[in-house]
Length: 172
Image (cartoon, rainbow, N blue to C red; front, side, top):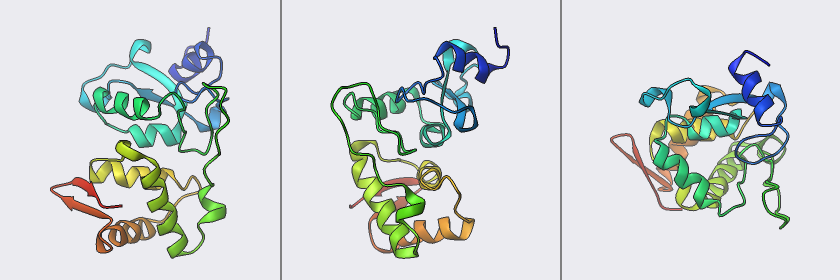
């Protein structure tokens, strides 16, 4: 039996992402604590699942309640932010566009981020920290800190996002 936590979880889950049930390459896998370790969650296997790094970044240190809400808002068709669609239902769904091929200019990136936030419905990030990691996770090949800061500033300056005491409100 594998001894590293990620290896153990991948084995138990049959090499699939816990959330979207798609094949999960080890290079893209990470350990998600259902009850966040930053909120006192343990490292035992009952509290941990293997999922893609994008989902882990999205869920971050959300409370368990917030994580359930994100999953429930998907209505049985969990849409992975890593552009992988779920096989939980037999209904085919369209894959969202991949960020690097769609969003090359600053305006394209802004439009892509706004579209992604709109698609999230009620499961949009509620804190500035989570919004930052969510935007960063949309670009697996990476965004510079300056590009990320610029996108956040543009969201605020256009009124799409309002930040007050690190809490985020939307007008999309």
